[in-house]
Every structure is written in C-alpha cells, then in structure tokens.
Length: 384
Image (cartoon, rainbow, N blue to C red; front, side, top):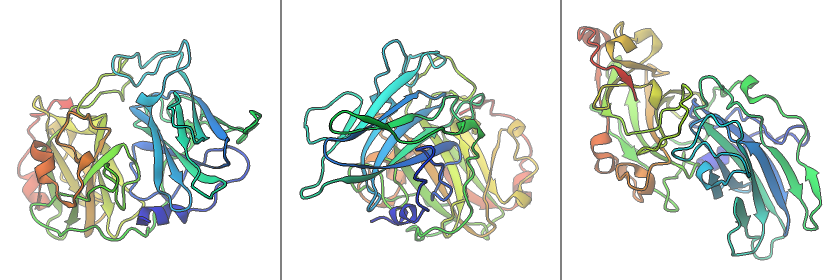
C-alpha cells in the first residue's frame, strides 16, 4: 500500500446521509487549482451506481475508482471517455463548444463480470470468493473557469441500481460547489521524504511507475505525470526557475472552443518538507511566457519576494511556503501520447532530465538582492 493510500484511508468516515459527495480536507500533495469530491459505495454482484451530471466549465474532469481497503486505483474514466446525452455536447473534446448550454452526461460503475465494454460504464469484477466491492469514487475537476469557480454545474446525482433494476438515491441535497472552500487543512501526512538530494542547480527526479502510468507514493491519479525537486532556501532566499512551457489549451477566461495541446494542463506547486497538506500552485495560464513559451518563475517565502518578481517584469512569483526545506512538483495532466517529454510512462525512478528534455526547468538559488539587481525587463508578454 502506498503512503498516500494510508493517508487517505485515515480520513474521517464520509457522512452516511446527506449529499453523496464530500469535499476532503486532508488530501496530500494537493493541486490548489483543482477541486476534489469523494463518495463511497459498496457494490454486490449485479449492482451498479449511476452518476448523472452536467459537464463543468473547467479544463478537465475525471472519475478515479479506488478500492477502499488499500486505496489502490482500480479504474478510471476521464471526460474524453464520456459520450454526452442525446442533444448535449461534451465540451472537453477538441473543437467542441465549451460554452454549450446542453452538457448532460450519465456514467455508471458496475459490479459486472461481463467482458464486453459498455459505453460510459466502468465494469469491475468481484474478486474470487468475494461478495462485494467497497469503493471510493474520487471526482476531480481541474482549473474551473474564472467565471465558474466551482465548475458552474451542480454536483452529479448518484443512484444505486440493484440487480433487479430497482433504484435508490445515494444522497440528498448537495451544496453549490462554488460555495465550498477548496482550502486544505494544514498538517503532516504520512508521506515519507522523497528520494533525492538538495542541489544547486536543483535536481529534477521522477518516481517511476507501478502499472504503466506514473504513480508511486504521492501520485494517485492515473491522468497525471510528475517530476519533483527537493529544495532548501537556506542555500538562497530566492530560487529562480527558467524553463519552456508545453502547449496546453487556454480555458480560464471562458474560451468558447476547446483546443488540444501537448498536455491538457500543467502547473508548478511548492510544498513544505516533510510533506504537508498545504500547497501553493501556479496554473499554466498564470505562468507568463514569451513568444517561444519560455518562462521565469521566482520562488521564495512571502517575506523574501523580490520587488521585481512581478507580471509586468515578465516574472511569475510562487510562494515557497518555507524558509527551509521544501519541494517543487511539476505536474503534467493528461499528456498527449505524442508528447514524449512527459514522464507518464516512466517505469524507473531517477533523474527527470532524459525524459523532460527541453521542458526541464533549470532552477538556481540567489539572494533577493541579486535578483532585484537584474531590474525589470518586460520581455514576456503572454500567458502559458
């Protein structure tokens, strides 16, 4: 069992009544630009749950199905896998209207031994000698549009369907997602320190894969790929990252059409160390780039932020959350199969450079004064 699995299992039990979905407050290695909802269900042979909802106004959505006993991810369904209801639009498919008014979908998770794929259905086999599956469903929504902070759609309605076809509701009224704070509780997790050493320049690492997808201790989303670097701000008040941004759709300001890219979404996040549930992240569209998609990100404690670490100076600032040991996470969400510089299929832990190639950021420490001495040169003009 991964340490993230242990941490998630340690969460307080979800409410047995009321809304099926609960917003978790102690997820480790959180992405602050994502929204997370969790529900639990037990399925006996022939049973299923249906999830009926409206596609949110966001960059990406997915359902990951976890086995509750050890939190292993046993199945997943992303937005691109979902066929919309008749007359509706799936706004996540390239070329689709993101502002479509009709955006309904219906998916199911079934305890079914059938081998024939069923559209919009995740079919799970009951283990030999078993009589039920205890599941945790994790619904993720990445980067809701600025005008729709909770995604702009009600939470999906969940019903349980018995083997005889009878239906029962899996929860009552749910809150408006826009009114639920996404903040996580600050506190220690059981995640051990990541493998690696603090260097200057920093050293980017990948953790390797367990099932053909980048997973490992801190990675419980099949859609994500990660590289990380350990940091220590006793080497310098300011860490300057310079890198090249992968191509990604631009959606935050309500773009009417969905486009594709090398990744669906990417971000940089900082964490305290040992690992902590608090995080500071900048999403791709918050990272300022030039015409060649090059960027400069300054990372420091808030008290040490350089006076020229400003968008008008072509610089993105990211809170380090610590004046000592920490870590940075580079996240690629749903990389294109043709994008070879993402660690989604890396199978061995080790340095990230050979995989990231020209997309590996270079990070060096310096004093606040040294960075301020570089002045303000607004050479970067557009978002990532």
